[in-house]
Length: 618
Image (cartoon, rainbow, N blue to C red; front, side, top):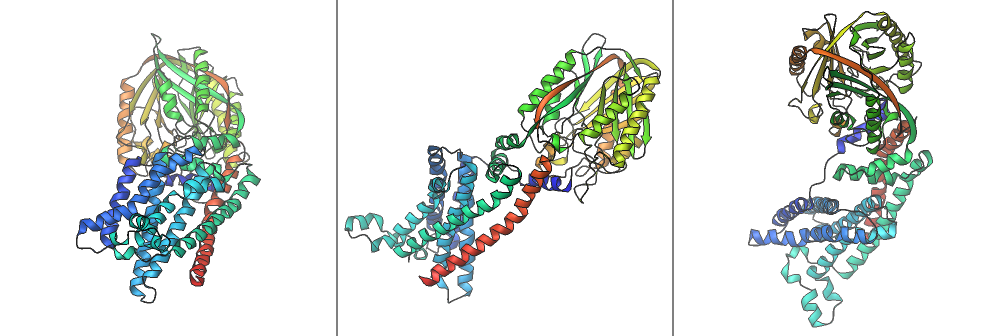
């Protein structure tokens, strides 16, 4: 992962799930009641609360109910949950602006109540602009079409103000209409004082703000269309859908920018003498990202659910360019893995575990028949993903002396976070890539010539008490111990995304009962719905992790029994992000976030200045 990709991944800190519409609405009404108690000063506190609910909460309630219906009539896809959350946010924006205006008015006698009225008009126009932006992104409406549902909350509030402030009395001549549509005596005096011209000003400001939103989107959209050929609104719509309700809309965007790739899918299966599967290693050469359950982010758990025995889905030698664009692609991977599984030929002979070190690379593995399991790490140095081309080349080097299939794992077990320009990505031509290539060649030669013996295997698994927020995914910690000729090799798989530096060595030093230990992480991106950097050992006591792994190794050793193993590899054709597309996407998204904030601030400053001029001139 590069620095720009790390910045893109850090967008995961915004991820949350939209509450149900009735939860959001209840919160809005409570806030409205509290605001009424603070803002109004009648003899009865319940009357103040009711006035707050009526004047502030009612527009929010109407907007939450009417907006999704209007939007869907126009071909949009705004859900009640999103509509209500949007209405609540707009209510909070309005309350915040009025609170600030009220405080200023108290300490600035010259401004007075008229200043608060002017700020209220600006607040109503502001929430219209904000709703317009969200609706254009979520439902992909044109400006004019999106303006219809976007205006619901502002129009509702304006109508209530016109009726209960007495503004309608200036234009209604019929006494009957005045009786029903002009009711200033029923609200606190703080609400009275608007005149019809105020609502004309509100309409003018709304038009100006709408044009500002349109121009802002045009400026933001240009880099996306020129570099990726897609709209920024497509990304924004997908991101909002993902963070708010966990939808798959973001995958549609990724699918538009993705490209086809052919990836090896390798399976190592271990079965008991009776034919029952005991353990299964599944390694597709893709990256389990980009975040959460989007694309291949949930691949490790899907692999585990598809295996008969205890599943081990370690991390392959592939970076973010090989993120699957949709979860549907995971089905293709699993289907290919099942084909490989059906083609397995088992053998009860294997070599003992062997470890070689070349430069910064340390490779551990053993052969099963004519095939081999190989795990690479750069620990104690810090590293992130190994690029696809480097992994393919290392596999070829390992096969040079006669091995057939090689299941090559990136242990992904030592990294120092997301700081700096180079986050440890192992690319072709780097010294680390050559360390890995030469080490793979040495290990392949040693395994080809090594003595074989009867294979025994033991496994153990603990779901652990930890959760994704702690850096541990649903697969917990899994251990597989292979014994050949009285030599034991333990492979520890933690369902997490990389590890704190030094933790691997502390695990190795504390583990007893085996001769060689290697620790791997699955690189699951389930843990990155919390934050982009959420490594194993960052939130959890390392002592607890070390103790649990020691116990699991003991249980796996106690589970040792004669087995036979087989390995096979098949190729899958899937759609991935593609070469350089991840970097382009990351750079463009990061530019939108950084420059978009400044640009939005400039637009807000400009339209606010125009608003002030309008009030001064009128």
